[in-house]
Length: 273
Image 1 (cartoon, rainbow, N blue to C red):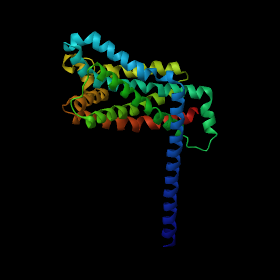
Image 2 (image 1 turned 90 degrees about the horizontal axis):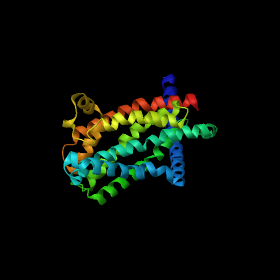
Image 3 (image 1 turned 180 degrees about the horizontal axis):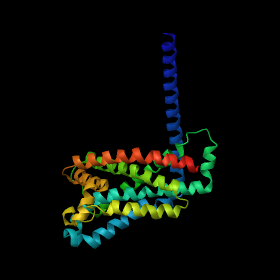
Image 4 (image 1 turned 45 degrees about the horizontal axis):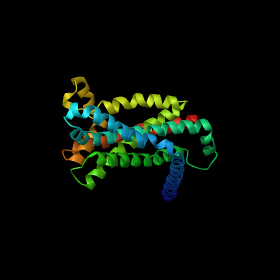
C-alpha cells in the first residue's frame, strides 16, 4: 500500500515535469521563430525566391505553353495557378536548410548550445519562422494571378483551405531540407541536393499538362506523388471538383514525413551541433 501511494505521486510529478519541458520547448521555439522572421525582414533580398520567382514561373508557363496545352493563355492560367501555388511554397522551403547550414558555419548554433534552451528549439524555430515566406509567396502568386485574369470559382473558404494545404505540405517537406542542412557542410550542397529532391516531386505531376497525356511509367509515379495529390486538391478547392482523395493523401503522407524526418533531423543536429 505504501509503495503504491509513493509511486502515484512520483508519476504525477514526472508528468508535470514533462509538461513543463514541453511548454519551455514551445516558448523557446517561438522566440527563435521570431528571430528568424526578423532576420528575414532585415535582408529582403532573401525574399526574391518567394516573390519574384513565382511571377517568373507563371509568365514563362502561361505565355510559352498556354496556347499549345490549353488553347488559350486564360484557360491555361486557370489550370496552372493552383498547382504552381503548391510548387512555389515547396521551393520556398529550400531556404530553411540553406540558412541552417549558414548559421552553423558562422557559429551561431554554438551560442545556442550555451543557452538554457531546448536542444531542438533552434530547428523548430527556424522552420516555424519560415512559414511567413510561404504565406508571402501565396499572397504574391494569387495577387499576380488575379491581375492576369485568374478567378477562383468556389469561395474564400475553399481558397484558404487550398492555401493551408499547400503550406502544410511545404512545412512537412521542409524537414527534409532541415535534415540536408544538418548533414551537408556547405549551403551550396544543400541547395544542389534540394533541387534533385524537388524536381521529381514538383515536375512529376500534372502541374503543366493533364495527367492523361503523360506516359504510363510517369502516371504510375504521379498516382503516388503527394505533391500531385496536393495540386489536384488545390484545383478542386479553387475551381470546383473532387478533393477528398487529394486532401486525405496529402495529410497522411505529410504526417508520415514528419514522423520520419523530424527525429532524423533532430538526431543529426545533436551529432553536429
